[in-house]
Length: 212
Image 1 (cartoon, rainbow, N blue to C red):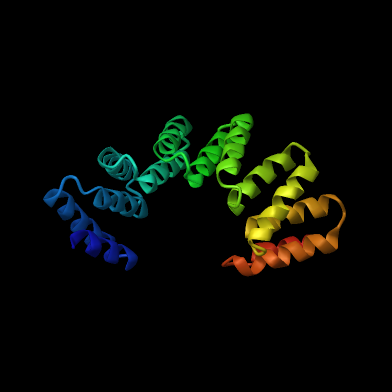
Image 2: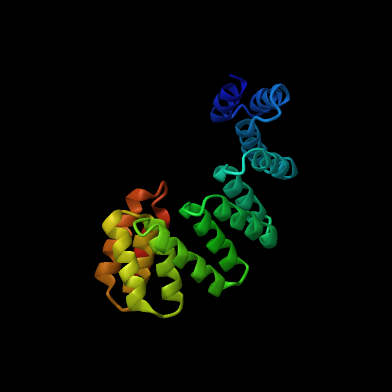
């Protein structure tokens, strides 16, 4: 019950109340991985990152299959530019759940951010093999193809992503860049317009259209 109360208070942005409820839950049941994971999220919200890291680590130690905790901890470490530890966490997540595409995506992102584009490409290709109908994976692979000037292969990936979700924002934005580079401004504008409704703030998309 206390864990559920903590979730509710978090949704209401009552972070002090959420922490009180969740900490009480962990004291009553020290094996409550869900409560520790939720605590990690709340600590991130109030920017107490050291406590967030500890909470996520405790959640993982209690539940080695807690992919949410792995992904959240890895993201937090990456945001702090602690790429080595973030990579380690995401590899642990993949070992725990080798069919979990999000962990591959996150690992690829961190590898790319750390300057290892080759490693990122290999990880994204692994993700593509295990989740061939995941639009996010297709776009990630396409973006790396585009960076390598393998335009036809990039377009093929973007088109597959758009077959899955025609209004996928990043797929449309990436396609727009390709069309623009080829001088096909009509298609670029069409792609940008498809991206706009999917984004909470369409201003960046409208600016991109104006710049074409």
